[in-house]
Image (cartoon, rainbow over all chains, first blue to last red; front, top):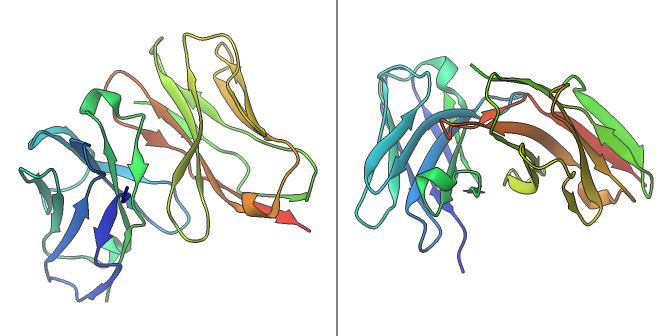
Length: 114
Length: 113
């Protein structure tokens, strides 16, 4: 079975631009979570979605938004990019939102903002 | 809010030896889960071991075991018979009633041949 997939692998954007990151969960998993991992730090929780509804949100500005589609894939959108948004963005999937400890992570998308 | 502290930014160990990574956390909750994740240089994070706070018995997964001290809010990871493939960043994480994980800053472990 395929694991969690994320696209693109790498991305370079300019300040002020918008970016969309994509995630496909493991087949059968209904919950997707997004994390930001700045170099040298642990992952910071951004969002969790389950059955297309937001179930949790971390301490991130409104420039960050996400959604989950009927096939349980997900998009993370970031508007008005800042240099500080440069990070590895991780997606993780699990069977359901209450079962978030059984998370399976994707390889991440490396976003560089110049 | 919960906090997770990993006080060892870097650790090194010789192949076949044992190493212990430290983690402390702060919470007012009584029921929660604690985890150790491994992130190799290829970046994909994988779960190493999990501990339920209501269980007094320490979790063990092959060469990996934890020392869970609930009163001290301590959760260390012991890696026995270290292998070159154990070289990675290790993250300690906490999940409480909100189901939102809090991760530590990580410990970089290097296993030397």
